[in-house]
Amino acid sequence: MRRMARGLLLLVLASSLACTAGGRSGAGAAQPGAPDGRTSAAPGAAPSVASAGAAAAAAPSGAQAEWERVLAAARQEGTVVVNGPPGDIIRRKMVDGFTSAYPGITLEWNGGTAPELAAKLEAERRAGIYALDVFIAGTNVMLTQVKNPGFLDPIKPALLLPEVTDPSNWMDGCLDMADTEANTTSCSSSTQ
Image 1 (cartoon, rainbow, N blue to C red):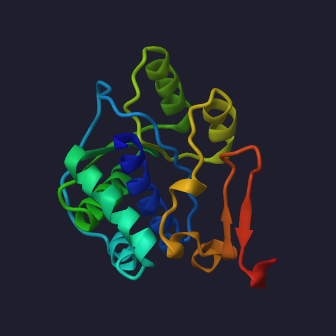
Image 2 (image 1 turned 90 degrees about the horizontal axis):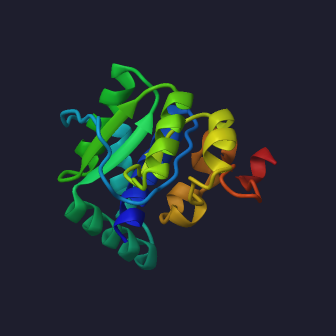
């Protein structure tokens, strides 16, 4: 439950950022734990992330109830661990936006190059450490170093809210996923 809650929470964040910032990001959840060398940053604000929380209020009752359950579990656990691109600007934007949208949940950001972070993930898994909740990287590393060893969970089942899966909210009207063998793509009718 804790594993799913943390991963789901950040998936909505990543989806929200992809929708509003025009970028694409990949993410996968893993089991909880605590790796050495994690970093954390102070809370702040980012409007694009707040929209994900506001949009949750408009979701149908089934999705809304599940979303509320996920948020409660994430608040109880208190931390979401993310590996992502290096750089102070992206770290600040992600951490500030997340903590502003989800008070009481800390986002711990590990920045580095995708190959370095993939190697770190592999070493942690071999040691039995399942600390990472979300890994944000390009498809080259995700498909060659992270997916094949089985380090990714499917994304689509974790996307609870209708506005997150609506292709019209995504760049080019397509919600592309390369996390499963099906490599699914959902596109709005105007882009097909």
